[in-house]
Each structure stands twice: as C-alpha cells, then as structure tokens.
Length: 227
Image: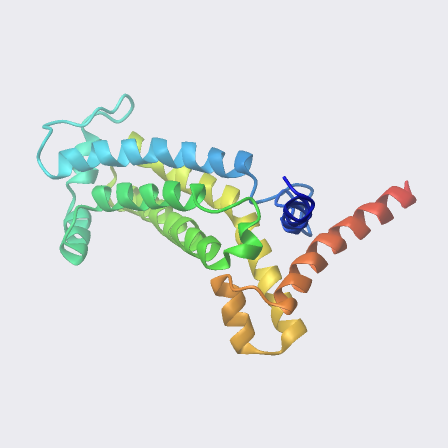
C-alpha cells in the first residue's frame, strides 16, 4: 500500500463512529446486542406459543395443551370475543399475535448498536410494535379471562411475555425520544427533525447525539467526585 492509500485508509478508519456508546440517562447502551438479543429470544418463544394457539383457531389441531386450566383454554380461544376480533382483522387473534411477536424479533435484530441515533424510525417502529400492542394484548388476556370466568395458561404466559418485552424495550425508545428532542432544541426546525428521524445526518443531529453521550459522562464523573 502506497503512502496516499495508507493515509486514506487511516482517515476512513478514524471517521468510523463509535457504536458502543452509552447515552444519558443509562449506565448501559440500550441498543446493545445483549439487550436486543434478549428481546429477540423472549419474543421468539412467544411466536411459537401464539402460533400453537393459532393452529387450534384455524382448525389444524383439536385440543390445546393446558396443564393448569385444562379445557378452559379452548373456551377462551374459541370465545365470542375471540371470534369478534377475528371478524375485525380477518385473521385469528392468536395468529395476529404470532405475527406481532415475529415483528418484535425482526425489529429487535435490525440496525447497529447506535440505532437510537442513526435509525430512530426503526427504534420507534420497534417501540410501537412492542409497547402499545404488548400492553393492549396483556390487558385483553386478563379482561377476557375475567369476563368468561375461564383462563388459558399459554395466553397468560404470552401476556407476561408481552409485559416483559415492554420493560426491556422502553429504555431504547425513550433514548430515541431524548435524542430527537435534542435535535429539535438545537435546530428549531421540523424539517431537520424529520430528517434526523429518518436517519439522515446533519451537524445538529451529530451534536445532539454527542450531547447525550457527554451528559452521561459528566454526570458519572460528578457522582465519582461526590464519593
């Protein structure tokens, strides 16, 4: 490699951004692979559970395994409430749930470990798939059980999984909102805010991301001085 080529390679290498940064207000990176793989694995288990329940709803299986409530599961899954939801969406609600959990898996694994800054739209889609849908599905499971006087073990498991995913996902979504707020505070422009949301680079977007990282560093140093 000649001198010019070596200099170009060094410049390009130095321009590569640090992806494993820790933004304010966390002590960890909410977009880290450890965090997101955990979400993907938990959501994958829900895909299989909801898919299994969906097989009963579309008539491919005759019974539903339930070690606690027995045949009550079939009453819940085949209830009028479930049929009403199927009429709304033209797809059995358990199958719809399996697709939603599959979306959680896909969105959890997409993007870099700094996607809260470089792909905000992806994080927001991930948040919309996990948080509101997760809360609604969990509430529906409990309301349906209370209304029918019958319960479904696997449905309760998916409800718990949904709430667990909400807890695991909110920190990254919140970081993304903090970043976008800083972009708007620095630019005062809705156009630049929209571009930052779509992942287009700008000086204001870069400064907003660095500000979140530096804030966290400063706060950590201050806590160290206090001790």
